[in-house]
Image (cartoon, rainbow, N blue to C red; front, top):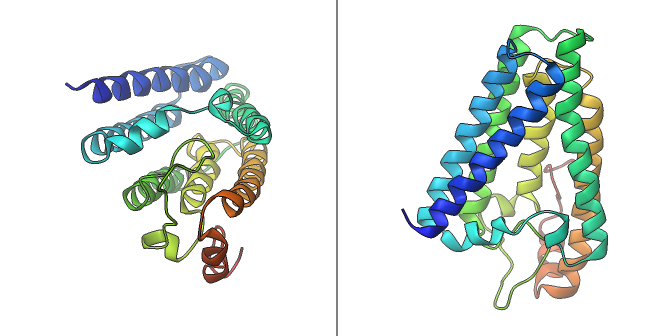
Length: 225
C-alpha cells in the first residue's frame, strides 16, 4: 500500500468514527437502523471514491486532504467553513435527538429514497472529481490551472456544490428526521455563501473564469440559478 492510499484510508476511518459519534451518541441508542444504513452507504461511497482517486488521480486526493477552516487562506472562507462545520454537525445531532425523543416520523419509502439521493450525491462528486483534478477542498488557484468547462461544468459552474446540497438535504430524511432539515437548510445557505465568495475569488485570480461565467449562466441548477 502506497503512502497516499494509507493516509486516505486513515482519514476515512477517522471520519467514519466521527460520523458514528455524531449520529448514535445523540440518539443514545444503537437500535437506529436508519442511522446504520446511512452510515454504511455514506462510508462505502467515501471509501470507493477515496480508493478510486488514490489510484487514478493522486494529485486530486492530495489537494483534498488539506481541508477545514485552518487550511483556508482567505479569512472570509475560514469563517464560512467554520459556519459550515457547525451546521453540518448540528444536522447530525438534531437527527439523533429526533430519533431519541421521537419528535417526528419519516415514512419508510422516503427514508430509502433519501438514501438513493445520498448515493446520487456521491456520484455527483465522482463525476466532478473525474472532470476536474483541481477540485481542492480549499478556495485556491494553482499555477498553470485552467478553467474546466467540460462534463458537468458545461451545465453548471459548481457541480460539486450541487452534489453536496443533494447529499446534505437528503441526509436528515435518510436518518428519518424532519427536524434535521432545519440545520441542513442553514448548511445549504452557507454553501451558497461559499459559492458566491469563491466566484469572486476565481474571477480575480483564474484566467478565463469571467468569460466562462458568461457562457455558463447556471451556478447550481440549470434554468433555476
